[in-house]
Length: 96
Image 1: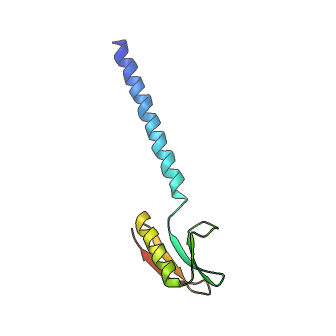
Image 2 (image 1 turned 30 degrees about the vertical axis):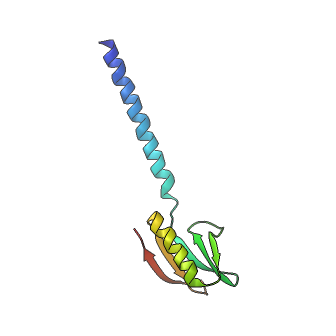
C-alpha cells in the first residue's frame, strides 16, 4: 500500500510541473505578436514584426513588401498592417 501512495504523490507532482510549464509558456507568448507592418524605410519599403526595432526585409516597391508580409502573417496567423508614406495606417488584413 505505501507504494500506491508514493506513486499517487509522484503523479501529483508531475501534474503540477506540467501545469506550471504550460502556464509559464502562455505568459511568455502574450507580450509578443506576429503582426507584420509594412512601413516606409529610407527610400523604400520594409516589413517589420510588431514590437521589433529591426526590419525583417527591405523592398523597393510597397506591393512586394505587402506580399512578403502576407506570407509571414498567413504562416503565423497574424495581421498585416499597411502604412502610408507618412506613417499613418492605410489598411489592416487579418489572417487568423
